[in-house]
Image 1 (cartoon, rainbow, N blue to C red):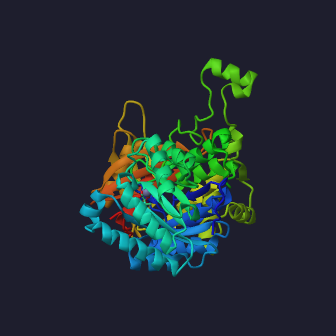
Image 2 (image 1 turned 60 degrees about the vertical axis):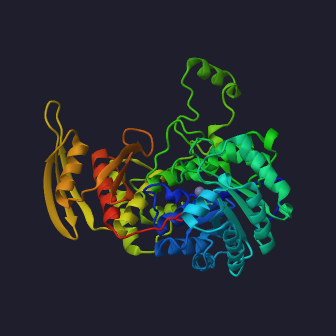
Image 3 (image 1 turned 90 degrees about the vertical axis):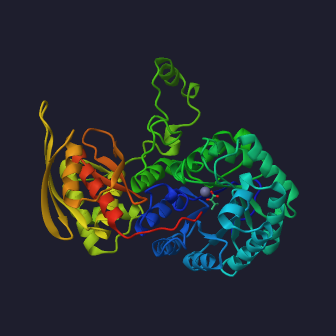
Length: 515
Ligand code: KIV
Ligand code: ZN
Protein backbone atom coordinates (compact mmCIF):
# COMPACT_ATOMS: atom_id res chain seq x y z
CA UNK A 1 0.00 0.00 0.00
CA UNK A 2 1.13 3.55 -0.69
CA UNK A 3 2.97 4.96 2.32
CA UNK A 4 2.30 8.42 3.67
CA UNK A 5 5.19 10.63 2.73
CA UNK A 6 4.73 14.36 3.14
CA UNK A 7 7.04 15.09 0.19
CA UNK A 8 5.48 12.65 -2.20
CA UNK A 9 2.49 13.37 -4.42
CA UNK A 10 0.59 10.21 -5.38
CA UNK A 11 -0.60 10.18 -8.98
CA UNK A 12 -3.89 8.32 -9.28
CA UNK A 13 -4.81 7.91 -12.93
CA UNK A 14 -8.47 7.41 -13.80
CA UNK A 15 -8.22 7.48 -17.62
CA UNK A 16 -9.55 3.92 -17.74
CA UNK A 17 -12.55 4.77 -15.53
CA UNK A 18 -13.55 8.46 -15.46
CA UNK A 19 -11.79 8.95 -18.82
CA UNK A 20 -13.83 6.13 -20.24
CA UNK A 21 -16.98 8.01 -19.24
CA UNK A 22 -16.30 10.53 -22.04
CA UNK A 23 -18.90 10.06 -24.76
CA UNK A 24 -17.89 7.19 -27.02
CA UNK A 25 -14.56 6.51 -25.25
CA UNK A 26 -15.41 2.93 -24.21
CA UNK A 27 -12.36 0.70 -24.46
CA UNK A 28 -11.96 -2.98 -25.09
CA UNK A 29 -10.08 -5.25 -22.67
CA UNK A 30 -7.03 -5.33 -24.94
CA UNK A 31 -7.01 -1.54 -25.20
CA UNK A 32 -7.29 -1.12 -21.43
CA UNK A 33 -4.39 -3.49 -20.87
CA UNK A 34 -2.30 -1.64 -23.44
CA UNK A 35 -2.96 1.73 -21.81
CA UNK A 36 -2.39 0.28 -18.33
CA UNK A 37 1.05 -0.99 -19.40
CA UNK A 38 1.90 2.45 -20.70
CA UNK A 39 0.67 4.07 -17.45
CA UNK A 40 2.87 1.68 -15.49
CA UNK A 41 5.83 2.67 -17.66
CA UNK A 42 4.95 6.32 -17.08
CA UNK A 43 5.23 5.68 -13.33
CA UNK A 44 1.61 6.16 -12.25
CA UNK A 45 1.10 5.05 -8.62
CA UNK A 46 -2.54 3.99 -8.81
CA UNK A 47 -4.41 2.93 -11.95
CA UNK A 48 -8.19 3.04 -11.63
CA UNK A 49 -8.86 0.35 -14.22
CA UNK A 50 -12.64 0.63 -14.32
CA UNK A 51 -15.92 0.13 -12.53
CA UNK A 52 -16.27 -3.64 -12.12
CA UNK A 53 -20.05 -3.62 -11.65
CA UNK A 54 -20.60 -1.56 -14.83
CA UNK A 55 -20.60 -4.52 -17.19
CA UNK A 56 -19.12 -8.03 -17.49
CA UNK A 57 -16.72 -6.56 -20.08
CA UNK A 58 -15.40 -3.97 -17.64
CA UNK A 59 -15.06 -6.62 -14.92
CA UNK A 60 -12.93 -8.77 -17.24
CA UNK A 61 -10.86 -5.78 -18.35
CA UNK A 62 -10.04 -4.86 -14.72
CA UNK A 63 -9.15 -8.47 -14.00
CA UNK A 64 -6.86 -8.57 -17.05
CA UNK A 65 -5.16 -5.33 -15.98
CA UNK A 66 -4.79 -6.71 -12.44
CA UNK A 67 -3.07 -9.82 -13.81
CA UNK A 68 -0.67 -7.84 -15.98
CA UNK A 69 0.49 -4.83 -13.98
CA UNK A 70 3.09 -5.30 -11.26
CA UNK A 71 4.38 -1.86 -10.29
CA UNK A 72 1.22 0.21 -9.92
CA UNK A 73 -1.69 -0.36 -7.55
CA UNK A 74 -4.80 -1.53 -9.42
CA UNK A 75 -8.07 -0.05 -8.31
CA UNK A 76 -11.73 -0.60 -9.15
CA UNK A 77 -14.48 1.88 -8.44
CA UNK A 78 -17.56 0.62 -6.56
CA UNK A 79 -20.69 2.33 -5.34
CA UNK A 80 -21.32 1.91 -1.62
CA UNK A 81 -23.33 -1.18 -2.45
CA UNK A 82 -22.30 -4.65 -1.27
CA UNK A 83 -22.74 -6.29 -4.69
CA UNK A 84 -20.60 -3.62 -6.39
CA UNK A 85 -17.87 -3.99 -3.79
CA UNK A 86 -17.87 -7.75 -4.17
CA UNK A 87 -17.40 -7.38 -7.94
CA UNK A 88 -14.63 -4.80 -7.46
CA UNK A 89 -12.87 -7.01 -4.89
CA UNK A 90 -13.03 -10.06 -7.16
CA UNK A 91 -11.89 -8.19 -10.28
CA UNK A 92 -8.78 -6.74 -8.61
CA UNK A 93 -7.91 -9.93 -6.72
CA UNK A 94 -5.08 -11.03 -9.09
CA UNK A 95 -3.23 -7.72 -8.59
CA UNK A 96 0.00 -7.51 -6.61
CA UNK A 97 -1.18 -4.20 -5.08
CA UNK A 98 -4.94 -3.67 -5.01
CA UNK A 99 -7.35 -0.96 -3.98
CA UNK A 100 -11.13 -0.58 -3.80
CA UNK A 101 -12.44 2.93 -4.31
CA UNK A 102 -15.94 3.18 -2.89
CA UNK A 103 -18.10 6.27 -3.05
CA UNK A 104 -21.44 7.73 -2.08
CA UNK A 105 -22.89 11.20 -2.56
CA UNK A 106 -22.94 13.51 0.45
CA UNK A 107 -24.56 16.68 -0.89
CA UNK A 108 -28.17 17.49 -0.04
CA UNK A 109 -29.12 17.72 -3.70
CA UNK A 110 -27.74 14.23 -4.46
CA UNK A 111 -28.95 12.59 -1.25
CA UNK A 112 -32.51 13.87 -1.60
CA UNK A 113 -33.02 13.64 -5.35
CA UNK A 114 -30.76 10.84 -6.52
CA UNK A 115 -30.16 8.51 -3.58
CA UNK A 116 -33.36 9.33 -1.66
CA UNK A 117 -31.46 8.69 1.54
CA UNK A 118 -31.18 10.69 4.74
CA UNK A 119 -27.87 11.92 6.16
CA UNK A 120 -27.83 9.19 8.77
CA UNK A 121 -28.48 6.50 6.16
CA UNK A 122 -25.61 7.84 4.03
CA UNK A 123 -23.35 7.93 7.08
CA UNK A 124 -24.20 4.37 8.02
CA UNK A 125 -23.80 3.12 4.43
CA UNK A 126 -20.39 4.83 4.08
CA UNK A 127 -19.08 2.93 7.08
CA UNK A 128 -20.59 -0.35 5.86
CA UNK A 129 -19.03 0.17 2.42
CA UNK A 130 -15.54 0.61 3.87
CA UNK A 131 -16.01 -2.49 6.03
CA UNK A 132 -17.23 -4.57 3.06
CA UNK A 133 -14.25 -3.40 1.01
CA UNK A 134 -11.78 -4.28 3.78
CA UNK A 135 -12.69 -7.93 3.29
CA UNK A 136 -10.86 -7.78 -0.07
CA UNK A 137 -7.95 -5.41 0.58
CA UNK A 138 -6.68 -3.17 3.34
CA UNK A 139 -6.14 -0.40 0.76
CA UNK A 140 -9.58 1.21 0.75
CA UNK A 141 -10.33 4.67 -0.63
CA UNK A 142 -13.53 6.49 0.22
CA UNK A 143 -15.00 9.34 -1.87
CA UNK A 144 -17.76 11.73 -0.89
CA UNK A 145 -19.32 12.40 -4.26
CA UNK A 146 -20.24 16.05 -4.85
CA UNK A 147 -18.13 17.06 -1.84
CA UNK A 148 -17.97 20.53 -3.36
CA UNK A 149 -21.67 21.12 -2.61
CA UNK A 150 -21.79 19.07 0.61
CA UNK A 151 -22.28 20.58 4.03
CA UNK A 152 -18.82 20.82 5.60
CA UNK A 153 -20.04 19.61 9.03
CA UNK A 154 -21.57 16.53 7.45
CA UNK A 155 -18.39 15.87 5.47
CA UNK A 156 -16.34 16.03 8.68
CA UNK A 157 -18.73 13.55 10.31
CA UNK A 158 -18.63 11.11 7.36
CA UNK A 159 -14.85 11.28 6.95
CA UNK A 160 -14.32 10.77 10.69
CA UNK A 161 -16.53 7.67 10.58
CA UNK A 162 -14.89 6.12 7.48
CA UNK A 163 -11.39 6.70 8.87
CA UNK A 164 -12.44 4.92 12.05
CA UNK A 165 -13.83 2.13 9.86
CA UNK A 166 -10.43 1.71 8.18
CA UNK A 167 -10.34 3.84 4.99
CA UNK A 168 -6.75 4.76 4.11
CA UNK A 169 -7.37 7.41 1.44
CA UNK A 170 -10.02 10.10 1.65
CA UNK A 171 -10.95 11.59 -1.69
CA UNK A 172 -12.67 14.96 -1.93
CA UNK A 173 -14.27 15.32 -5.38
CA UNK A 174 -15.49 18.38 -7.17
CA UNK A 175 -17.85 16.18 -9.14
CA UNK A 176 -19.50 18.99 -11.05
CA UNK A 177 -16.48 21.28 -11.61
CA UNK A 178 -18.04 24.07 -9.55
CA UNK A 179 -15.21 25.21 -7.32
CA UNK A 180 -12.58 27.88 -7.77
CA UNK A 181 -8.99 27.45 -6.63
CA UNK A 182 -8.93 29.44 -3.40
CA UNK A 183 -12.13 27.96 -1.99
CA UNK A 184 -11.15 24.41 -2.99
CA UNK A 185 -7.82 24.78 -1.21
CA UNK A 186 -9.60 26.23 1.81
CA UNK A 187 -12.03 23.28 1.88
CA UNK A 188 -9.14 20.81 1.84
CA UNK A 189 -7.34 22.67 4.63
CA UNK A 190 -10.52 22.84 6.76
CA UNK A 191 -11.19 19.13 6.37
CA UNK A 192 -7.63 18.16 7.26
CA UNK A 193 -7.80 20.43 10.29
CA UNK A 194 -11.23 19.38 11.55
CA UNK A 195 -11.41 15.64 10.79
CA UNK A 196 -10.03 13.63 13.73
CA UNK A 197 -7.00 11.46 12.87
CA UNK A 198 -6.64 13.17 9.52
CA UNK A 199 -2.88 12.56 9.70
CA UNK A 200 -3.50 8.79 9.48
CA UNK A 201 -4.83 8.97 5.93
CA UNK A 202 -3.87 10.32 2.53
CA UNK A 203 -6.02 13.22 1.38
CA UNK A 204 -6.92 13.18 -2.25
CA UNK A 205 -8.56 15.54 -4.70
CA UNK A 206 -10.60 14.73 -7.82
CA UNK A 207 -11.66 17.75 -9.87
CA UNK A 208 -13.79 18.09 -12.96
CA UNK A 209 -13.16 20.78 -15.53
CA UNK A 210 -16.58 22.32 -16.16
CA UNK A 211 -15.30 25.84 -15.50
CA UNK A 212 -11.83 25.08 -16.85
CA UNK A 213 -10.29 25.01 -13.37
CA UNK A 214 -9.72 21.30 -12.67
CA UNK A 215 -5.93 21.57 -12.69
CA UNK A 216 -5.85 24.86 -10.76
CA UNK A 217 -8.28 23.49 -8.15
CA UNK A 218 -6.30 20.26 -7.77
CA UNK A 219 -3.05 22.19 -7.29
CA UNK A 220 -4.68 24.44 -4.75
CA UNK A 221 -5.77 21.33 -2.82
CA UNK A 222 -2.18 20.08 -3.00
CA UNK A 223 -0.89 23.35 -1.56
CA UNK A 224 -3.34 22.81 1.28
CA UNK A 225 -2.35 19.26 2.17
CA UNK A 226 -3.71 16.86 -0.48
CA UNK A 227 -1.09 14.23 -1.28
CA UNK A 228 -2.97 12.37 -3.99
CA UNK A 229 -4.32 13.86 -7.21
CA UNK A 230 -6.83 12.00 -9.34
CA UNK A 231 -6.31 12.87 -12.98
CA UNK A 232 -6.42 11.55 -16.52
CA UNK A 233 -4.24 11.59 -19.60
CA UNK A 234 -5.18 14.50 -21.88
CA UNK A 235 -7.74 15.59 -19.25
CA UNK A 236 -10.21 13.04 -20.60
CA UNK A 237 -13.30 12.42 -18.50
CA UNK A 238 -16.97 12.95 -17.81
CA UNK A 239 -18.34 16.10 -19.56
CA UNK A 240 -15.53 18.70 -19.72
CA UNK A 241 -13.10 16.13 -18.33
CA UNK A 242 -10.83 15.75 -15.32
CA UNK A 243 -7.62 17.43 -14.25
CA UNK A 244 -4.99 16.50 -16.81
CA UNK A 245 -2.16 14.34 -15.49
CA UNK A 246 0.50 15.93 -17.67
CA UNK A 247 -0.37 19.45 -16.49
CA UNK A 248 -0.41 18.48 -12.81
CA UNK A 249 2.88 16.60 -13.02
CA UNK A 250 4.70 19.27 -15.00
CA UNK A 251 3.37 22.08 -12.81
CA UNK A 252 4.65 20.34 -9.68
CA UNK A 253 7.99 19.59 -11.33
CA UNK A 254 8.51 22.97 -13.02
CA UNK A 255 7.44 24.93 -9.91
CA UNK A 256 9.32 22.82 -7.39
CA UNK A 257 10.12 26.14 -5.70
CA UNK A 258 6.43 26.36 -4.74
CA UNK A 259 5.31 22.74 -4.33
CA UNK A 260 8.50 21.08 -3.09
CA UNK A 261 7.04 17.68 -3.91
CA UNK A 262 8.19 14.64 -5.86
CA UNK A 263 6.14 12.38 -8.10
CA UNK A 264 7.20 9.02 -9.51
CA UNK A 265 6.23 10.04 -13.05
CA UNK A 266 8.85 9.71 -15.77
CA UNK A 267 8.02 12.78 -17.89
CA UNK A 268 9.70 11.44 -21.03
CA UNK A 269 6.77 9.02 -21.42
CA UNK A 270 4.11 11.75 -21.24
CA UNK A 271 3.77 12.48 -24.97
CA UNK A 272 3.80 8.82 -26.09
CA UNK A 273 1.13 8.08 -23.45
CA UNK A 274 -0.97 11.01 -24.60
CA UNK A 275 -0.73 9.78 -28.21
CA UNK A 276 -1.70 6.25 -27.26
CA UNK A 277 -4.76 7.38 -25.29
CA UNK A 278 -5.82 9.66 -28.12
CA UNK A 279 -5.49 6.89 -30.72
CA UNK A 280 -7.38 4.36 -28.65
CA UNK A 281 -10.21 6.60 -27.46
CA UNK A 282 -10.62 8.61 -30.66
CA UNK A 283 -10.22 11.88 -28.74
CA UNK A 284 -7.80 14.11 -30.63
CA UNK A 285 -5.61 16.45 -28.58
CA UNK A 286 -6.24 20.12 -29.32
CA UNK A 287 -3.10 21.73 -30.83
CA UNK A 288 -2.84 24.41 -28.13
CA UNK A 289 -3.23 21.94 -25.24
CA UNK A 290 -0.52 22.47 -22.61
CA UNK A 291 2.38 19.97 -22.66
CA UNK A 292 0.94 17.50 -25.19
CA UNK A 293 -0.64 19.75 -27.87
CA UNK A 294 1.18 19.93 -31.20
CA UNK A 295 1.84 23.66 -30.68
CA UNK A 296 2.80 23.47 -27.00
CA UNK A 297 6.45 24.11 -27.82
CA UNK A 298 6.10 25.88 -31.19
CA UNK A 299 7.24 29.50 -31.28
CA UNK A 300 5.51 31.39 -34.04
CA UNK A 301 6.37 35.04 -33.51
CA UNK A 302 9.72 36.26 -34.80
CA UNK A 303 10.60 37.88 -31.48
CA UNK A 304 10.00 34.60 -29.64
CA UNK A 305 11.95 32.56 -32.19
CA UNK A 306 14.84 34.98 -31.99
CA UNK A 307 14.79 34.87 -28.18
CA UNK A 308 14.73 31.06 -28.07
CA UNK A 309 17.58 30.77 -30.55
CA UNK A 310 19.70 33.19 -28.51
CA UNK A 311 18.85 31.72 -25.14
CA UNK A 312 16.32 28.94 -24.84
CA UNK A 313 14.93 29.91 -21.43
CA UNK A 314 13.79 33.34 -22.68
CA UNK A 315 10.49 31.80 -23.71
CA UNK A 316 10.67 28.15 -22.60
CA UNK A 317 9.95 27.00 -19.06
CA UNK A 318 10.18 23.31 -19.96
CA UNK A 319 12.06 21.39 -22.63
CA UNK A 320 10.00 19.60 -25.27
CA UNK A 321 12.28 16.57 -25.22
CA UNK A 322 11.88 16.20 -21.45
CA UNK A 323 8.17 15.40 -21.86
CA UNK A 324 8.75 13.03 -24.76
CA UNK A 325 8.46 15.23 -27.82
CA UNK A 326 10.69 13.90 -30.57
CA UNK A 327 10.57 10.47 -29.02
CA UNK A 328 8.72 8.97 -31.97
CA UNK A 329 11.11 6.49 -33.42
CA UNK A 330 11.27 4.89 -36.81
CA UNK A 331 10.43 1.37 -35.76
CA UNK A 332 10.35 -0.72 -38.84
CA UNK A 333 10.48 -0.56 -42.61
CA UNK A 334 9.54 -2.42 -45.74
CA UNK A 335 12.14 -5.12 -45.25
CA UNK A 336 11.32 -5.89 -41.62
CA UNK A 337 10.22 -9.47 -41.10
CA UNK A 338 7.65 -11.10 -38.86
CA UNK A 339 10.10 -11.53 -35.97
CA UNK A 340 11.17 -7.89 -36.04
CA UNK A 341 7.50 -6.89 -36.17
CA UNK A 342 6.61 -9.13 -33.22
CA UNK A 343 9.53 -8.04 -31.10
CA UNK A 344 8.89 -4.31 -31.70
CA UNK A 345 5.28 -4.87 -30.64
CA UNK A 346 6.47 -6.60 -27.55
CA UNK A 347 8.82 -3.68 -26.75
CA UNK A 348 5.75 -1.47 -27.02
CA UNK A 349 3.97 -3.68 -24.48
CA UNK A 350 1.77 -5.38 -27.07
CA UNK A 351 1.74 -9.16 -26.74
CA UNK A 352 -0.38 -10.91 -29.33
CA UNK A 353 -1.16 -14.44 -28.31
CA UNK A 354 -3.41 -15.40 -31.20
CA UNK A 355 -1.42 -16.50 -34.27
CA UNK A 356 -4.35 -15.43 -36.51
CA UNK A 357 -4.36 -11.87 -35.17
CA UNK A 358 -0.58 -11.66 -35.43
CA UNK A 359 -0.66 -12.88 -39.04
CA UNK A 360 -3.44 -10.48 -40.00
CA UNK A 361 -1.63 -7.58 -38.28
CA UNK A 362 1.60 -8.51 -40.07
CA UNK A 363 -0.20 -8.56 -43.44
CA UNK A 364 -1.59 -5.09 -42.70
CA UNK A 365 1.87 -3.93 -41.70
CA UNK A 366 3.30 -5.13 -45.03
CA UNK A 367 0.58 -3.30 -46.95
CA UNK A 368 1.31 -0.14 -44.97
CA UNK A 369 5.07 -0.48 -45.47
CA UNK A 370 4.48 -0.62 -49.23
CA UNK A 371 2.83 2.79 -49.07
CA UNK A 372 4.99 4.38 -46.41
CA UNK A 373 8.71 3.77 -46.17
CA UNK A 374 9.15 4.53 -42.46
CA UNK A 375 6.85 2.96 -39.90
CA UNK A 376 6.74 4.72 -36.51
CA UNK A 377 5.58 3.39 -33.17
CA UNK A 378 2.39 5.45 -33.51
CA UNK A 379 1.63 3.66 -36.79
CA UNK A 380 1.97 0.31 -35.04
CA UNK A 381 -0.41 1.33 -32.24
CA UNK A 382 -3.02 2.46 -34.78
CA UNK A 383 -2.60 -0.70 -36.79
CA UNK A 384 -3.00 -2.96 -33.76
CA UNK A 385 -6.07 -1.08 -32.50
CA UNK A 386 -7.65 -1.56 -35.90
CA UNK A 387 -6.79 -5.23 -36.09
CA UNK A 388 -8.26 -5.97 -32.66
CA UNK A 389 -11.38 -3.96 -33.31
CA UNK A 390 -11.88 -5.58 -36.70
CA UNK A 391 -11.39 -9.00 -35.16
CA UNK A 392 -13.67 -8.35 -32.19
CA UNK A 393 -16.74 -6.91 -33.88
CA UNK A 394 -16.85 -7.49 -37.58
CA UNK A 395 -20.49 -7.41 -38.57
CA UNK A 396 -19.58 -4.90 -41.30
CA UNK A 397 -16.26 -4.97 -43.16
CA UNK A 398 -14.81 -2.78 -45.87
CA UNK A 399 -13.81 -4.71 -48.98
CA UNK A 400 -12.93 -1.92 -51.40
CA UNK A 401 -13.58 1.74 -52.08
CA UNK A 402 -13.27 3.82 -55.21
CA UNK A 403 -13.86 7.55 -55.14
CA UNK A 404 -13.87 9.92 -58.10
CA UNK A 405 -13.31 13.62 -57.65
CA UNK A 406 -12.63 16.30 -60.20
CA UNK A 407 -12.94 20.06 -60.00
CA UNK A 408 -16.33 21.09 -61.31
CA UNK A 409 -17.96 17.65 -60.98
CA UNK A 410 -19.85 15.92 -58.15
CA UNK A 411 -17.74 13.46 -56.15
CA UNK A 412 -18.84 9.83 -56.35
CA UNK A 413 -18.01 6.90 -54.08
CA UNK A 414 -18.40 3.21 -54.99
CA UNK A 415 -18.12 0.91 -52.02
CA UNK A 416 -17.98 -2.84 -51.61
CA UNK A 417 -18.47 -4.17 -48.10
CA UNK A 418 -19.57 -7.33 -46.34
CA UNK A 419 -22.49 -7.35 -43.95
CA UNK A 420 -22.50 -10.49 -41.84
CA UNK A 421 -20.32 -12.20 -44.44
CA UNK A 422 -22.47 -11.21 -47.44
CA UNK A 423 -20.84 -8.93 -50.03
CA UNK A 424 -22.84 -5.83 -51.02
CA UNK A 425 -22.11 -2.85 -53.26
CA UNK A 426 -23.39 0.72 -53.39
CA UNK A 427 -22.68 4.00 -55.10
CA UNK A 428 -23.48 7.52 -53.90
CA UNK A 429 -22.76 11.15 -54.68
CA UNK A 430 -21.82 13.67 -52.04
CA UNK A 431 -20.49 17.13 -51.27
CA UNK A 432 -16.98 15.64 -51.12
CA UNK A 433 -15.44 12.16 -51.32
CA UNK A 434 -15.94 11.50 -47.58
CA UNK A 435 -19.56 12.62 -47.69
CA UNK A 436 -20.17 10.42 -50.75
CA UNK A 437 -18.50 7.46 -49.00
CA UNK A 438 -20.60 7.80 -45.84
CA UNK A 439 -23.77 8.07 -47.96
CA UNK A 440 -22.80 4.92 -49.87
CA UNK A 441 -22.20 3.03 -46.61
CA UNK A 442 -25.51 4.26 -45.18
CA UNK A 443 -27.39 3.18 -48.29
CA UNK A 444 -26.28 -0.37 -47.44
CA UNK A 445 -26.45 -0.35 -43.63
CA UNK A 446 -29.40 2.05 -43.06
CA UNK A 447 -28.30 2.57 -39.45
CA UNK A 448 -30.38 5.73 -38.89
CA UNK A 449 -27.59 7.01 -36.69
CA UNK A 450 -26.60 10.64 -36.41
CA UNK A 451 -23.05 11.82 -37.10
CA UNK A 452 -21.81 13.91 -34.16
CA UNK A 453 -18.17 14.32 -35.03
CA UNK A 454 -15.76 13.74 -37.88
CA UNK A 455 -12.11 14.55 -37.34
CA UNK A 456 -8.87 13.79 -39.20
CA UNK A 457 -5.35 13.93 -37.77
CA UNK A 458 -2.04 12.83 -39.11
CA UNK A 459 -0.46 10.10 -36.98
CA UNK A 460 3.11 11.15 -37.76
CA UNK A 461 4.41 14.07 -39.79
CA UNK A 462 4.85 14.21 -43.56
CA UNK A 463 2.38 13.88 -46.42
CA UNK A 464 2.86 10.12 -46.52
CA UNK A 465 1.72 9.91 -42.89
CA UNK A 466 -1.33 7.83 -42.08
CA UNK A 467 -4.46 9.85 -41.50
CA UNK A 468 -6.27 8.88 -38.31
CA UNK A 469 -9.99 9.51 -38.51
CA UNK A 470 -12.52 9.58 -35.68
CA UNK A 471 -16.22 9.31 -36.38
CA UNK A 472 -18.68 9.76 -33.51
CA UNK A 473 -22.17 8.37 -34.07
CA UNK A 474 -25.24 8.35 -31.89
CA UNK A 475 -28.43 6.38 -31.96
CA UNK A 476 -31.08 5.84 -29.28
CA UNK A 477 -29.01 7.60 -26.61
CA UNK A 478 -25.85 5.57 -27.26
CA UNK A 479 -22.71 7.34 -28.41
CA UNK A 480 -19.72 5.57 -29.94
CA UNK A 481 -16.41 6.61 -31.44
CA UNK A 482 -15.05 4.76 -34.43
CA UNK A 483 -11.46 5.01 -35.59
CA UNK A 484 -9.73 4.19 -38.82
CA UNK A 485 -6.27 4.84 -40.16
CA UNK A 486 -4.80 4.68 -43.63
CA UNK A 487 -2.43 6.64 -45.83
CA UNK A 488 -5.57 7.51 -47.87
CA UNK A 489 -7.78 9.64 -45.61
CA UNK A 490 -10.97 8.76 -47.49
CA UNK A 491 -10.29 5.06 -46.87
CA UNK A 492 -9.44 5.91 -43.23
CA UNK A 493 -12.80 7.71 -43.01
CA UNK A 494 -14.67 4.70 -44.41
CA UNK A 495 -12.91 2.42 -41.91
CA UNK A 496 -13.75 4.79 -39.04
CA UNK A 497 -17.41 5.00 -40.07
CA UNK A 498 -17.70 1.22 -40.36
CA UNK A 499 -15.91 0.78 -37.04
CA UNK A 500 -18.38 3.15 -35.36
CA UNK A 501 -21.31 1.30 -36.91
CA UNK A 502 -19.95 -2.03 -35.64
CA UNK A 503 -19.70 -0.62 -32.13
CA UNK A 504 -23.11 1.00 -32.32
CA UNK A 505 -24.83 -2.11 -33.51
CA UNK A 506 -23.02 -4.43 -31.08
CA UNK A 507 -24.66 -5.13 -27.75
CA UNK A 508 -21.84 -3.75 -25.59
CA UNK A 509 -23.47 -1.76 -22.77
CA UNK A 510 -21.92 -0.07 -19.73
CA UNK A 511 -23.63 1.14 -16.60
CA UNK A 512 -22.76 4.61 -15.45
CA UNK A 513 -21.27 4.84 -11.93
CA UNK A 514 -23.12 8.03 -11.06
CA UNK A 515 -26.52 6.54 -11.86
O1 KIV B 1 -16.51 12.89 -10.05
C1 KIV B 1 -16.70 12.11 -9.11
O2 KIV B 1 -17.26 12.45 -8.06
C2 KIV B 1 -16.26 10.75 -9.28
C3 KIV B 1 -16.31 9.89 -8.06
C4 KIV B 1 -16.81 8.54 -8.37
C5 KIV B 1 -14.98 9.91 -7.38
O3 KIV B 1 -15.81 10.36 -10.34
ZN1 ZN C 1 -15.20 12.08 -11.60
